[in-house]
Image (cartoon, rainbow, N blue to C red; front, side):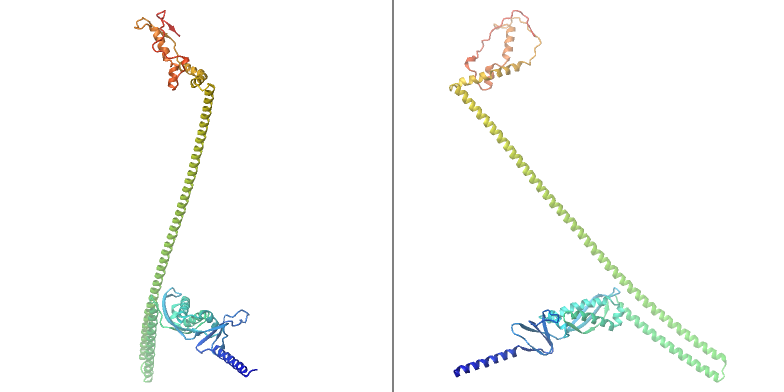
Length: 470
């Protein structure tokens, strides 16, 4: 092999080893103590055989495989959260204000650290703080609702233990742990806590006064005993000793009476304050119930109005659809009737046209039979209808009833006719002549039936002056 080629191959192998070593060094990541390194991608399986979502490392180092793995850091810096809780409802239905400050951070506990990798990776510190604040607010209200104000105010250790236990349990679900809780002050709107403080102060003062009274009593008793011993020792009279004892008893009774009187006053003030606070709590409860009833009434009213409006809209739409359906039926019925009338009229017109066509064909045949002479054709038509025409003339006078006609003829008429002949001629003229009947019909009689002769009526000379017709 050529020495140059051998040198090239050796150099390439060394360079490849060097590049591989440098890549290994760059992919080997160390985790700082104030962070958690989360490796995600192809990280293996869990103990139950399921695919692991991430691998968390706190301290130490790990090799990050290229392409199949990547990594990010979770910051372990504590987060201070100011929780200014207002109007939290206690078990006594008294609203209190509990301003406090919580310090939380990402947990390094196994399992909890996995929750942090799954739920907090990629979030900013402000987003983590807002998430923890929502959890703390909810748990704090829940704890206050299960405790009395006396427990919250006097037994702070119990209150803080309850807060720590509940809040930390919920925070672990997202990978956080509770570092510290500090309740700055507790206050209420009704002044119940202030009344409790005044009651405790009055009780302490009364206890001090009772102690002083007892010390005075013991001192008086000691003095009386000393005087008694002195009177005994100096042989004083028994009366003086009894008198001293009585005086000591009187002082003790007065001291006891004063103490009991002051205790009664203190107890009276405490009971009065408690009753006032109960009355205020009931008043607030009644006001809340009244607001709830008003809201419920408003909701019911709105619901009823909405139901009425919806029903009216449905009824309106139903009426509109019904009216449209009826209008459509009327339009269809009218169209059907008009089509029927049109078809009927068309049928009648067709029938009339057919009749007229047949009549025209018949007239043409008649004219053809008359060798084209219209007068002869008319004569044929009249001859065919002559019987019906005579019947019409007869029907015109057949219902005229003449029971009796009396005529007195004195031949006083200036014409050549007698009165009787003129009367009969008038009756005959009252019957419509056939020529006039044809004239009224717009036709003309043929000449073979005769022509109308004016003023040529035949004179009738009666033989008797009186005729009777029945």
